Image (cartoon, rainbow, N blue to C red):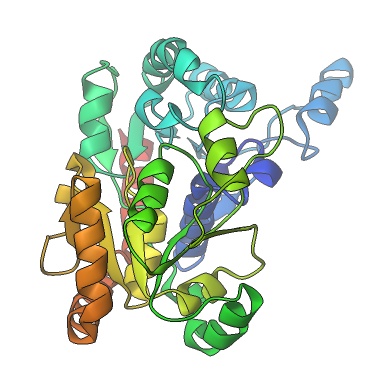
Length: 350
């Protein structure tokens, strides 16, 4: 079976959660009998492919199933091509209006129109894949008029091997020591930026957010506020060249996000055996259990207490971290590959 696994704007999304999820899909498929192609265009670019119409050459490559991971004009063109030619269409719902809000300046205003567009776009599919039961509920409430199936984004455990060896290098690079509370990923208010900083102000520990943040006109006022004038014990590193360094340097992973479809970095922290503190939101109920593989909190006071408790109790950190590692193994790429192949086979034979 030849499957198009397409990520529109791939070069711009390679540092995002969507880009990481698609990397996981492709690595998982490499161990199966599926032949995955990553570009739908005959000349690897939509403009060059469109020029082929002038000489009656095909615009699209041949594939048995189309799987699109984004929502823009390129993905819409593939979706229309698939429907016109009877090619099974799988759309992956990495984006919802709920997790789009709070990302950059103006995103809250756009979330309403985006919700209407996504309801229509995802309804074009023969099958919609999404990262969690929570996201399926969001899509069904829209309502999206297509079958919807949750499938974990997975975690690439192999990509994290050796994180311990980078601990001192990254601690020296950012001048941090002691028990370090950390986050990994793009700096957004939706990810709990304000809570992260206010919890830091309540404690004496060092807090580090490893990941890029906007500085241009698209940056939200909240991101500007905290990254330009952070609390004395908070460091924003900007982009780092090796995520393993972040997981090696940190001790307690703090993720007070307001909305997620799953949260790949949580699984990465767990795969590294880190103690994890999460906001108690619905999506995490289906994956993680308070007191077993993480601690869950709601208020800033609860977050601060959890951080202090973990900082003072290395045995608790180790126990939660080991159980977290077991949880992460349940989301290995072998599972992702099996679920993807089953989805492709289903739509191809329906």
